[in-house]
Image 1 (cartoon, rainbow, N blue to C red):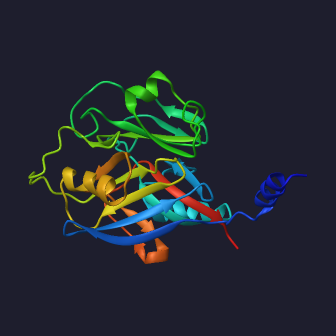
Image 2 (spheres, rainbow, N blue to C red):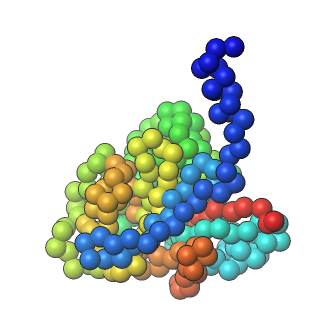
Image 3 (cartoon, rainbow, N blue to C red):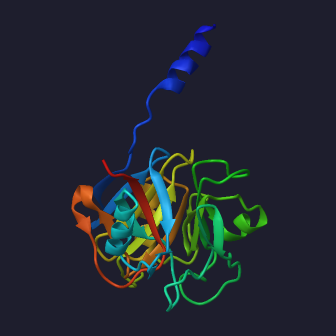
Length: 249
């Protein structure tokens, strides 16, 4: 057996860490942010409802997971929704599409094209653990994502900020979004802990985190659950929730 094959065999049998999730606080342009990095070692899932209906908050989801022998490690609101708390764009959970993709422009932030899709566990042509893909690119060659949520606008597309962002805009809000590393091995979920405009939020992903693709998830209702850093946000009822779970010990 060659030395290269021995090295490959050794690496293959190394134990994979059960959890790689990390959350850190940060500052950029005078504003505070919290960024949680998810890797393929984490059990990332997308939720909307359970046996008793739409979860709507982290506590309901955590209770249901507890009944399944699971612990909630991280959670964040994961896309825009209608008055019934149903997603207004593509929603795929456990490989099954429940709501279709929307490719037309429209009102509000969601319809401010280009918007996009966060996909995890996709197959070719996006065969990487995580991807943020502009909506019409996604629709033209859709990967079979294990989970996917559509939102908008794109914050960063191919290394450029959304063309409609205004640096001096006084439209300030608490905002959350997700960016993906160039190799698709890290998904970075960010929430602003201060009110910021779109330009500042987009530049945080591009200039601070160095990602070329990032997607806005929502604003004002933005919430984070990260017990490792003492976060358990309450507020408006939520629609889709993205989460990292692990088995109870």
